Image 1 (spheres, rainbow, N blue to C red):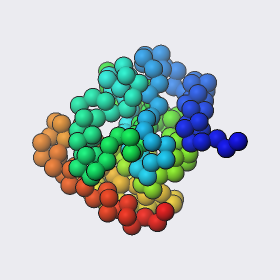
Image 2 (cartoon, rainbow, N blue to C red):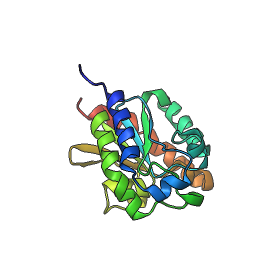
Image 3 (cartoon, rainbow, N blue to C red):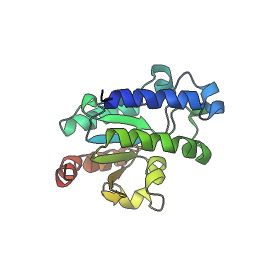
Image 4 (tube, helix red, strand yellow):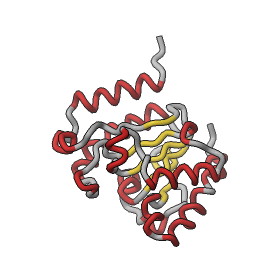
Length: 190
């Protein structure tokens, strides 16, 4: 019997728990925030780590930044059920601090496995932490909105939606970058 992608993702989620990844983070978090959405999605969005709302609800991007993300999805005719969304680090860092390099490194193989299962056409990185996991030598201020191919995968670095909440000027930049997603997708062969 063929195992479908959702079953593979469920196995991977269980493996993170069984492997006791970042136990000190896990002990301070409510739950593992693995990822949600369509396992057959063409687009996977990758943030950095869950915040307070995400930790409570067990789902990535459910706070204010998530609402903005939903609005941007609507501008290109998509909704959350069409895409897959996750974070590098799957537990909320205490006090919403940035994830530490060793925490990102511990979770990266699992994130890579998530992407290997889903096989999206494009990985949209949200914020510099996410971008730097895949494209370590780039600066987000210089490459946002520009698709980059690396190891057979197309990445689109975008500013984090939360940044637009604190900086009104960035909001339009993010929307402009976001509206390029459909045309980038069209250029990627199936």
